[in-house]
Image 1: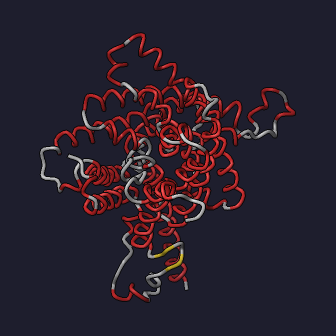
Image 2: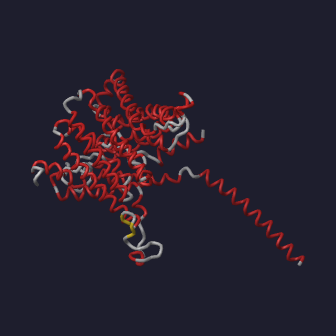
Length: 214
Length: 237
């Protein structure tokens, strides 16, 4: 607790649960659903958004007093697009298979509402250190949901976690498969991600009744 | 002609922007509380997609693809400006949306007022950028197909938001558990609609099956001929 004051730790902790960007603020849904069929893809996407949001927030915050209000959306888009190009090139160079799985969704980080949303709501009005913490907090909140959805989808859909079989071998029928259990291939289809997020929202709002809408 | 019809139906039902690839979910969830606003936003999305996808196709074809700069001179044949795709696409989209906003404000102030903040927000709608990026990654071949793809993806998104708005208007009178009300039940209903749309997956495989049948018939005939020869050989022996 030395370098970060109590008010600032709130910036990191809030988005993890009470002000979660996906389930409460309803931002960044597009990429959260499409690539979560594998845990590895979810983790990489989480790290990519962490990079873009953390650095983007700092850059916008440093420029906040010189950006004319009329063109601020364009400036934000340019900052995000440049950072995403860097992420995309790094992915293509060091993890080509993964960049094929993520395909257009790396590019879609540009239009990820969380990033533009945090720029508008926080970075334009606060100093760089706090903007950095806010960016990290929201990106972590986003990553937590991505990992949760990816966990269930990969475990129930292919019986693996990060590519490692954990329930036994489906072809040789060891482990859980010897009892007649089969992989639920449906979990790998896109609509199940929507239903899992709906269930996560249900759990979240049951535990924190102030979030219930009328 | 066939490939136009195929692309049209494929983009609306099988590769639906909302149910298959989840683009444009944020505005989809935010605007779908009433059918009237949903129709307005859906129409705006179709219009913007129909304009930006062909424009970005032209950019891709003559500027961004590997070897695209050949028209400037043969020494440019190896240039690959693909990494600039994101910035160029988002720049054309932001510009076109600004233009559309000005035109709509001039010719239909009532539509402009009802859309409110959502028209400028279309610029950052993932569906618009996603349409252009998918057009690039699926290597759509001609300008006509690009226009077709833009319009049909827009119609697919429009269908989705229309359906969910209609359902949300009715579901307010149902006994949804309190924690699920609003956002939660919308997610689950959208998931169920997505499952329904999966059933369209078998729609466009008719042509492929016919070709396979013809090949099978040919194989069967040669086998019969061979068997006859075998029989004849046996009799002689």
